Image (cartoon, rainbow, N blue to C red; front, top):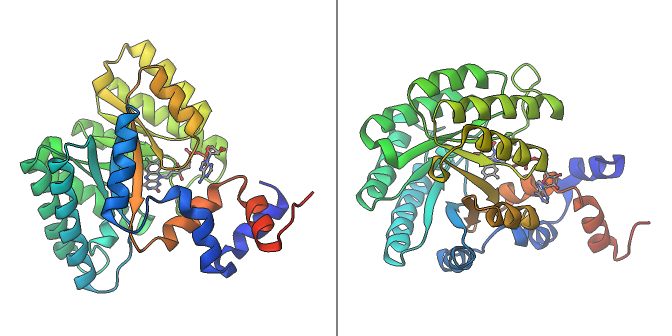
Length: 302
Ligand code: FDA
């Protein structure tokens, strides 16, 4: 990332919300469930699966979590009614993890139970390190009763991940593996991209060799090609893994994966609470600095 981009990333919170909204529109389906459903239909027509995420995190009041829980139940009913190839992704702190862990568990259990009744699946996203252990514990508790209907996420930037994966393999866990997006201290995460990628490859191979269902969530072509090789070496069946990408990111690579005959799921966020998610996506976009500069100042930076 150039020095200019780094400076802009640090000043992103100062950029007017309307401009952040303008640049994040490709990453978000829209404010309402109908917007998200239209995007999912389009993806399904192109041979891709989807996962719906109602935007929201770190809520301050229990009513917000209860409202989100209800919205997830409606979402699962709609997916079923419209016969979409789509599951749902949830964030523990949206459902109250930082307010009251039992309350959060009850909310997540309601959603997973509904998914089980409808033959669907819930992926519990992984947030920052303060909730890693609690999220894994919640997943393992739910897995006992809802085996094929719930999974969680592991982040390759976490130093603890190799050990977590050894334990999760024993449980035949269903995991999404991603790099990890939260800003964390150096004693908790690898900071260098080469270390994060090395960890991603090692942990992916461990999961696939040990027959754990894996969502390979990355836009990094080095990691995608590594996965292709491991899948071929192990002669893995297509239903033992899937690739996953975020809406609006690296669509060419996405198409290539599908053309090669692999299953691919697109993460489709929607809702009113779009700001935090958008800031994270913009920080990852290598062209973001140039685009925002052009929009704010109305001319091209040479
Ligand atoms: P990397 O960031 O190196 O990107 C590789 C290339 O992809 C870049 O060089 C660029 O070309 C392109 N790219 C990436 N992001 C872009 C963007 N926003 N705009 C334009 N181009 C972009 N994290 C987490 O902590 N908890 C979670 O639960 C999840 N869940 C999740 C689900 C899914 C389906 C995905 C794909 C990702 C997540 N993540 C996540 C986010 C993940 O941790 C990571 O931050 C991003 O995927 C970016 O990492 P990459 O592996 O894509 O590599």
